[in-house]
View (cartoon, rainbow, N blue to C red):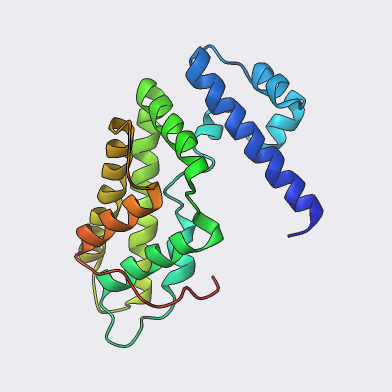
Length: 207
């Protein structure tokens, strides 16, 4: 990544962090784009270069990244079932820099969850985002296992994985003194949902 891309990434991250903090402190509806921009020390025009609206800030860096598992599915390994392939893709994605949930990011993730839970319009969009996410994951799984499973079977598997991820978010939100990192919780929940042990292979470079 070049210096220009790094600067853009830092600005984007700063805007997200500042916006989420202000949403929780002042309320989502009461916080304006101008206030977010001022707190992040950028102009409103710069804000709109990164996000079409303040609602898009909420969903710009989701825990559930639709494109991440697809990068790691690739061709099935010998003897690998669809459930094992989906679990491997999610596990390897968690091991990559593309989808990192480090301890310092935990508060930001939970802030996002609290803000979404407090605003009906955001809850409605979150449901749509989850539905679109599952549709994308299912299509990827069917494409990889062409002829070996149908849309219904793919929906069952991806629905189980996404349900596990949502359960983690709820548990993390309720647990004020967690003894596990979010990454560990995600791994454990997906393994339980798909009834699959943790893969032992090293994550390949994403395609």
